[in-house]
Image (tube, rainbow, N blue to C red; front, side, top):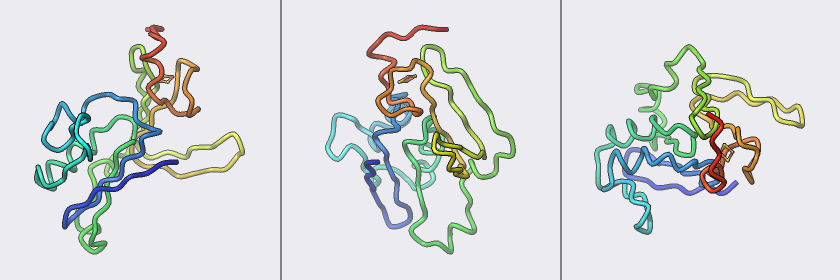
Length: 145
Ligand code: FES
């Protein structure tokens, strides 16, 4: 899986394009930090670390995540998503199932993976990255409520 990393002095934001569902939440929250028309499209110098973390925590697919550069400070400031005790599954109108919380993901090979945060599972059947949504539902005009 492709992964790109962008850093400031405090955190590194990791973007996994294969998981991106193009919800537009990141760039609508801050076009200065997340601008899909710019290369590189993420510029961490354009916002505070707290603002960046808030936006990344709001990514519904888990395509965006972050880690603290200094592991000691990570223990002091846990991301909001790790404090979530309940797992929610939301049916996204015309799009994927959005799973958020702490859960165990079991792949087709039976391999279990403990997850924390958000993932988007394909509901339309057209993703090229199954079982994850890759945004293809928009191209096929998937509209199953
Ligand atoms: S629901 Fe997004 S690609 Fe299928």
